[in-house]
Image 1 (cartoon, one colour):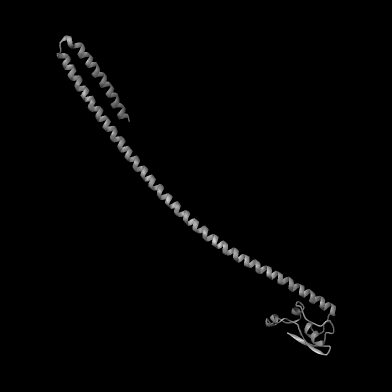
Image 2 (tube, rainbow, N blue to C red; image 1 turned 30 degrees about the vertical axis):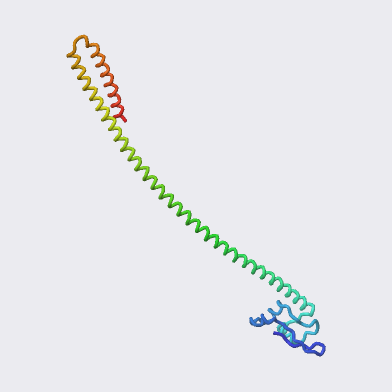
Length: 207
């Protein structure tokens, strides 16, 4: 978008709007005032005036126009820098998102691994508790059986002692006087033994 202008007898083409803006269909004085223009420094004709500002308005002087063009160039430069910064920021954010996604995947995998470890520990704990219960039951059975065995042995010994005492008593009644002292001593030993084994039997029952 532009126009031809005669300068020193030579027709020259002056670009008003760059081609990329022309393709977008941008037009009008408002757009022109914000874009850098390639215009001659003196002698703006009616064609340029009609294109740059509406009819009936006061045309700007060359100094005012150049000042506006300079401001437009600066504004475009600022926008280009800002767009470049935004582009860099977007690229960095995209890279950060990819890193975060990879980190999240790693954390999720670690969480799943820890869950599996916890489940195994819970299973092991249940097995240990079951083994402890079975061991306790076995110990109770063994203790009960062992206690009964001790009581039976003590009862058997006590029966033997009582039987021996009866025999000693019968022997003492049938013996002559000269053997009485010996028989009495044996009876005393039998009685003490009976008391001892009776005490053991009582303690075993208490256990």
